[in-house]
Length: 384
Image (cartoon, rainbow, N blue to C red; front, side):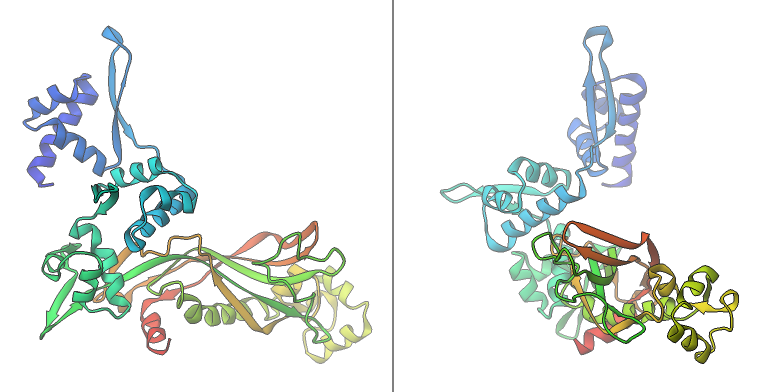
């Protein structure tokens, strides 16, 4: 909305809130109309609430109740099925575990229009060019030309060339080719995990069931699965779900080794228990860690799991939670990309899993910050 229109709408809202004035009366007094007021409120996530009768009548404005994250993810999946696979709203909603009413509510709040087409009166989502810009840039980032991306999204290159993000056109012509000026940014739920080896060099645990697959049916009651795991619930990246782990898991693994494997802590009580094994006692001396319990250094990994000479095994794996929305959440200017970084927080623990029983070391996960450098991701993209 233009600044002068917003000014009148805000004045109308002031009349509603401070003078208990109806929407029609407030809009007329401010020189606007009820439709514009409602449109503005929808855009900023607010709604009109009326209560009471007669002298007790009260009109107010409040924030729209937010849909829960899990509900939003299901709704977004339903919308993706409708747009990319041509599914109807009922079929798409049922498939992902939501309902048409929830999908309609989300679309309304986002200002996304729907129409009914054909003999079956199927619901078709009609995004404006501006609402298609994230998907358009996403398509181009996967190698499609501007023409191909526009065709897939049922729009035109001419329309998309007029669309801007933060005041800048999202595509620009270089010679005869349209070039994207932005990168898509995703928000992943990324997990990296692996096994540990002890003093004798052998891997701890059965190593048969990964922590991401463990359940009461495939665990053993006597022989434990022992895994280290770090979870990033909000891992922002310009790489999609297929590439993000390939690029970052090796670096996350090296980060864990550098922070958790190197002896840097004192715990005389734990060292004393280690020294009850003559072989360990001699190894501590040979490694130059210390000559007595009070000056012997141990690693954070040894300290949390209370085992000597713990190391991360060379093999590690990663996964992305496919319950998260695969669609990008925002756009990043290519001009700003080389200097841009994200800093997701990972939660690290060692898991000991048996049928009907689980232990976590430490009980409260260790928060670990990891730096995502977009320039590094560009280098990864060239090799993936």
